[in-house]
Image (cartoon, rainbow, N blue to C red; front, side, top):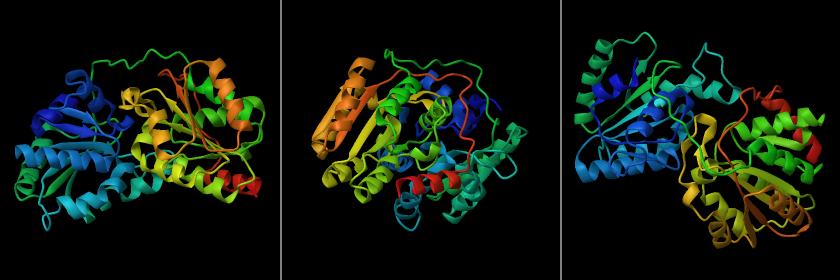
Length: 371
């Protein structure tokens, strides 16, 4: 189904969300049509942030907003669904468009399997009316579902379209780019070279995939790395937990700007605890690149300033490999919490693979190594 037809049937004029590759047609349409527009479209930091923003839109206008997200973001909306939107509280109507990763019977990555199994159930348990959109869904079926939804929305309830893989199409091409020159995979190769045999915790998405392939290319073991393949935004907290309990070992965290934004409060906790053995590297391309390249707000943020305000004594930003290498070497030798923001281009090689070892095996060999 053309994404334009879906939005025509929904008849909303405000959208907010966190990008998802399963919803790339929707994301590209919104960026092509509105860009980032305060009146019509805002990409938020996390899915709970989206719900709050959409609730504010409804309070100000009386109209029904749309929140889009990958199903892994359902956990971030459970609290505001129960304690803000629900008709036993404020009865705020809202439409969700949810990309169904890990749908039972459809091959997907391990971090999506269980989430895929409970996607529809979670929404229904939260008293959200659901309708599944697949490749064969007709316009008439969608219109009928929307009419049912309208009755629920009128009574201050919520509804969700669960979108199967490949169900939505958009013919226009959208190119996402920035002016930075360093490629993320090469940045990771430089980090690995300086870190040596010191443990690395890497963030969700292509960063972990590129770290895995760097080890393969180097003929190295994967025991040095914990790949945070799911739980976007939590790799720095994982790294903090490791660093506090392994104070005699340098711990490296490879993070991304979208992940930092998703749970930025973790930086305050890291700064407050100030582990002397943690190096927090934020690779900032100003984009949710793993799911399509849609922008984050990080291009206009002072991440170094935020880090210092949170208690990081050492925080710098680099945009070239000479400065990157110098800062990596300094951080390795330094006793004290460090943050390095690395300005990165958007893009990855087309033949980038995925980890070939099971997540449970990754955990086991990493734990054995740092023991």
